[in-house]
Image 1 (spheres, rainbow, N blue to C red):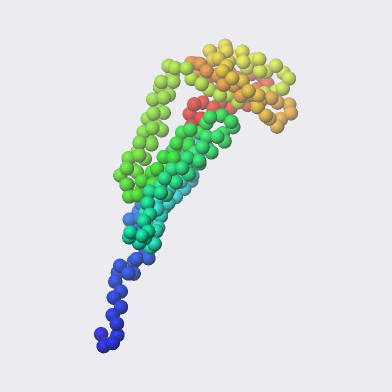
Image 2: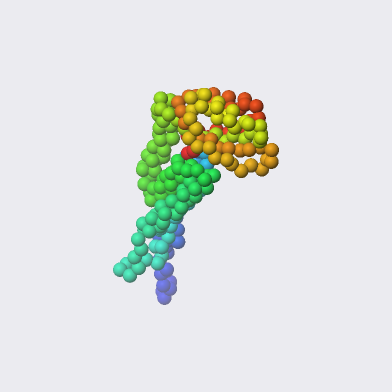
Length: 247
């Protein structure tokens, strides 16, 4: 090198320093969160539940990104013994924020307590995304596997137990007004081995029709009751909501 010309010492570390925390490892963690969250969302989508593949994928991927920002996003302003940040602070805020999202899923379902499993799945997806973003990929995989054990294995167990126990069902019935249809429907319900737990009139935009929601409980076959109510003269719509549909 010519005399008097200072040495610039450019190294690979200097060139890659602006990409610190944005390497292939972090990209892989985001993609893992995206894939696992999408799997959970696909299960919800195939079962016609709320918060399907798009919602779950967004929640899981965003959680991973926020956790990576918490881990690596402030490295350029950290000064030892002067500026110190707690990398867990964003993770705590994710838990709180997703809790509000889950509460919205539960409270906006026509005034009834519904969507509990859906809200729990969104919260779980956020946790899986956080684990993937933190580099805990094995834990993320295990919890994803356990999710499918719950939604498929436990659902089968619950259904098997419900065959021998009393089950509940909600029926939204729309029928012709002024024709005495409701007494006939209620008589059919009690004759079929069911008891009426609650009956609430619902709003309808049809002037010549009345809508009611009937909560029934019993050990008889629910599909048979629905079919018989649908055959009552004057009944227009019978919309059942079994326990699975309340998730």
